[in-house]
Amino acid sequence: MRFDVLTLFPELFEPFLRNGVTRRAYDSRQVDVRLWQLRDFADDNYRRVDDRPYGGGPGMVMLVEPLERALAAVQADQPERLPVIHFSPAGAPMTQSRVRQLAAGPGAVLLCGRYEGIDHRFISRHVDEEISLGDFVLSGGELPALALLDAVTRLQPGVLNDAASHQQDSFSDGLLDCPHYSRPEKLGDEPADAVPEVLMSGHHGRIARWRREQQLLVTARRRPDLIAAARAAGQLSATDERWLRENAL
Image (cartoon, rainbow, N blue to C red):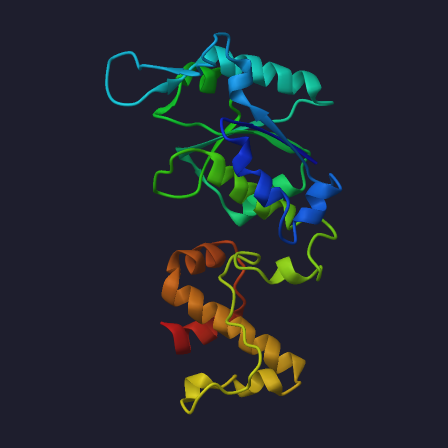
């Protein structure tokens, strides 16, 4: 798959692409990330890509024409036209479900805005989807683009050392993940300092049920909206519902 990133700060991506477990996918171009410096498509000596907003107000607005020249160059280089994603607080929240869909697709053009925003005419003409990381504001779209790249890349075959790792992630089945433990067996004298006994029992059925119950408990306490969504989608069994009634609510 391929991602073309339109950005004023391609240098922000370089360390990310060279480190961590996902690096192998970028090195091999299993996930082909191409960085495009927007200033290369400005038409003046100052490489200007922004100007003052009509109507007044603070900040600067990214201009349509350099963006259109950049996008045209990207699309001329692509074997097939990829969807254009813009990162914006007005976008739909990025969810694991949407990440899985993107991970199964051919890739996208990632548009990283800066300043006060992008001239809306470019968005109306060219953007296929707007995505938000949440109800807060960042200085630009580079961090959301990095988050999307990481989330999508780790789902590609062979990227994680254990192929089952992402199958146990939070949201993989609509719920939050259960707690995890490793050595040492005890850290102190309090009950909470010890690894739960069931995890050392070797009984796979009991361990699986404990993990499911912990998922339900954590999700019910911290994200009851996810419990409601899982219930509406038919993802909770009768055993799940009974356990919730008796323990979590």
